[in-house]
Length: 101
Image 1 (tube, one colour):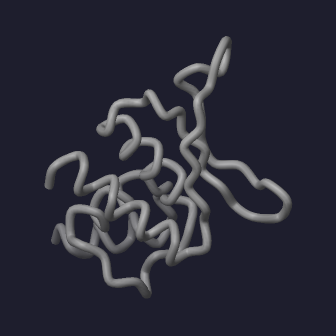
Image 2: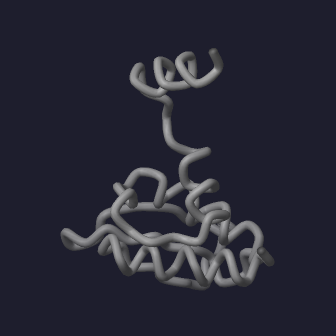
């Protein structure tokens, strides 16, 4: 999946989980920065407009990994990317051990 397609798919995921995505022109020390925050009670991902597409996708993956997307239909590459950024839980380790035997 190309970076543009991944970014578009992640923007759709954001909409489905109620996260707003904003592209802003950032200057000074904040140039190139961005991330997940809560603005006026709404989860929002702010991304610098000048951020390359691949980095936009990475920022969205990082932010959206925090949200429950299990009930959503996601392209396999998007689901894998989100799951790879989620912290492992004790239940995951047990499942991995059971699958490896």
